[in-house]
Length: 250
Image (cartoon, rainbow, N blue to C red; front, side, top):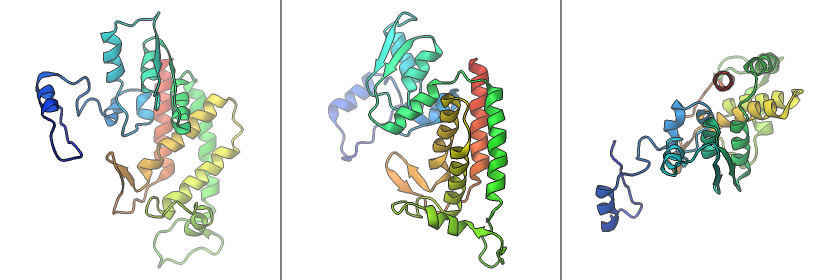
């Protein structure tokens, strides 16, 4: 797919137009975007819309003929794409990142040497705790159905815990309530190691935007249709994918 340039000013630079014809871009508009990282283990754990796929650091490593004795420094490491790729081919690296969440994402993605059976064992415990806690609430969406007197509505749960700045347009009460229960469960787990704790908490954060009504393209937007999702099913899928990657990398 050819490289496409869409200037925000709606006008084109003549120099850029010439360069676009004469120079093949390192990362084109198809292969380089973050969503294309879905095909790469570890990298697909979390995709940031303004990020890039591991094809870019791979290209640069080839260009500079780097090897196992090299050391790569990424001064704007983001969610760790460069360091994850470097680690996968045996090159040491370090990254600098000012954003706390991206630092956390990088740390989780770089600690893939975890026994997959340990991951699935913890997931089983979380599943049981989540089911028990969520069973205390009424999840029926229809307002015409009579609610059980022994259960609290998910709407009450969401309204009690929803942060003031988190508008319902961004995430529905139904979805938010599920996330609140999942977070409650994760905070009550007795974690054996920080690495496993980071993995499970990172997985929850990684599915937050996909499960919400927020969209990035790359500008911030909100979907018109309220999204109703099964948060825990999405979470399980993410964890199983992570566990599979652990197996592939060990």
